[in-house]
Each structure stands twice: as C-alpha cells, then as structure tokens.
Length: 301
Image 1 (cartoon, rainbow, N blue to C red):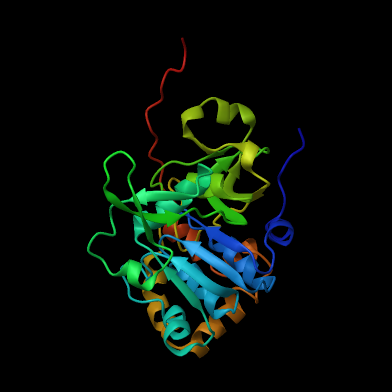
Image 2 (image 1 turned 60 degrees about the vertical axis):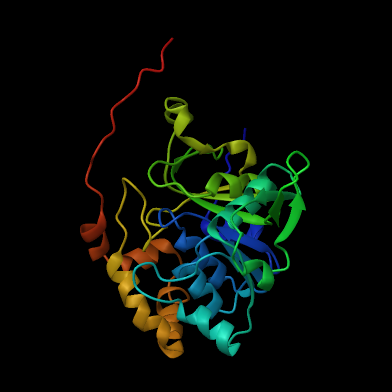
C-alpha cells in the first residue's frame, strides 16, 4: 500500500479548503500549532473552527482572519487569562465571528454522534443552564423507555480533523499515550483526517503495541512528520508544555498590533516548523522530555 506521508504544506493544501469545518483536537496535550500556522500561511478563510477548549491556536487563527464561526465549549488561555483576539471578535466584531456554544460534554457528544453516524446525542447535563436559550441547536427529546425529557445535541461531522500523535507508520496508524481528549471521536466523525506526528516508525513498532493505536490508518488521509509541531502545547515523552509562552500570550493578545507582529514574525515570517524552531534553539534544551519508560507487557499467548 502506498505511503500517506506528505509535507505539512502539502497536507493543508490538499485537505483544508476555504469554507470548511475544521477541528484541531487535543486536550491541553498534543494540540497541533504547526497545522494551524500552515492554515494561516495558506490564508484559508471562512472556516468554521470547532474545538472543546479553543485556546491559543484558535486565537491566532481568528486574529489572522481564517475563521467565520467558532463552535466551542470553554474558551481561554489556560492558567493565564482570556483569548483577546477571540474577545475582540465577539465584543467588537473585529473581525466578525459567529459563535455556537456548548458544554465540554456537549462537544464530546456532538463528535460521538458524528463518529457513530447518529443524527444526535441525548444528554442530561443542560438541566438548569441557560445554554439552550442562547443556542437553539440544543433541543429536547422524550425518552421512549422512561418518558424522561432529555437534552440533545446534533452530530458534528467536520470536513477535516487534524490530530497530533507521538508516532505513526507510513499508512497512518497513529499511537498516543498520556492525556487523551476527544481525538478518536473527532477523527471518526470527519470526512478527512490529517495525522501529525513527532516520529515516523515502522509498521512492526505499531504492531508490537496495538492497544496504543488511537487512530487507525484506514481513516487517515495524510501523515505529516513534524517534530515539535505542538509547541507551545506538549507531546508526552518528547517535550513539555511551554508555560512561559502561555503567560506571555496574555500580553501579546491584548494588543492587536502586538498579535499581528507575532503572526508576521512567527507564522508568515517562517517557511515551516523547522524554521520556527531554528529561531529559538533554547526550546529544546529547556523543554525536551527526560526518559521515563513504562513497564513492558507480554502480548504472547
């Protein structure tokens, strides 16, 4: 079978189109900033960006004018403050941005329904909240077994989902360890899937530890090998979260001119992630993970 390995530039050019619904997933861990930066560099526009916790990468994409709409739950700069480009867009319309808000589990449920080819997902967690008032897509259904009234959310089927993983083989069988989010559900719900990995390994490595395979190659359209692709997020076993960056973003994002200067230097001003890393060689010394190996298991029978 032919290899699915392509460059980041090639993957975004082939699979992310103007007007698409795009998911870049990862819950604090394995958020692929490199893909978001390439989307900005290729000047994609009118995107509907979906994510449980839109953080800095979506703030950057909103500031760059890529987004028409944000579908989300909690939004903020974790541990540091607000997303100020997002706030300017919502509060001042610069740039204009539609929003559609759910709870965390509401977004999980939407992706789970999409992955299961179901039209909606029933829930209890909107009891006593005002989210259904501001979001008419949150509706109710009567349980046919108990007569109970349940909240529902519609399935989410993105045009493209971008998942970061520690490693994959050339066919896209991708393995993740450490903190998980809703990557699997988002990938199975999506029409197209791009997997971005720290390391490309032989199929034998994947087969030697099958329970770690989160995304099977049969649903993957492109594999991108992009070391440090998640910075300032982190990749367990490869590099740590850059907390200094998250703190610094509070000041950068408060000022639209500073944010634009950041995009000019660190996104438009570099050709790719390798060039981005070459501008800040101290990151590897400061953030590279030390070895802490897990115990092996016997898969024999």
